[in-house]
Length: 211
Image 1: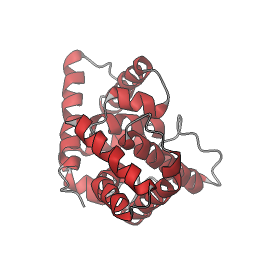
Image 2: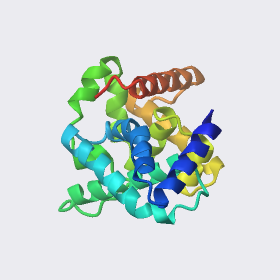
Image 3: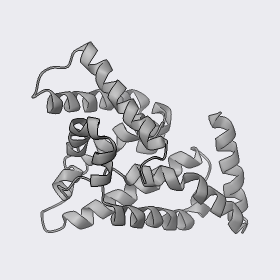
């Protein structure tokens, strides 16, 4: 049950702030695989490990400021999102100003992560289209469909109303349809099929079979 997990997270973070390093290590262990999966579709292996470590480094600095207004997971993935954005801005230097509402990870680095493409070969077209989405749209879509975050969690993390967030999810799926169907308008049947594919990829990523 999510509430039990969140309560346990809050207990661990309180112990961590009181100086219990073991509690901090337990939190890191709990979310390590989830963070690796989050960065999986954006960067290569070496950069992915660096970003996971940087996220946890930033978490250590941010823990004293955590007030428990959101779940710990929402707080952690907000740190992860901004860690990735800082990385992409750094990589984009020399090309202009990076805008996560406009630019995709393909704009920063056109090379798709080979480990992921091989692992989910039958979804290559969809994965390629996801990588072409603006980074903020990509993060929203992936957190919802691939990392099992609720709309309420994401609205909190992105700082927008839940209705706006759901509208952005629909717009993101429409962009994927346009990419995959050469601009053809989506039908209800196609939209359901696309959601099914997105959830299948999410199940695969959460299974831990991609390393």
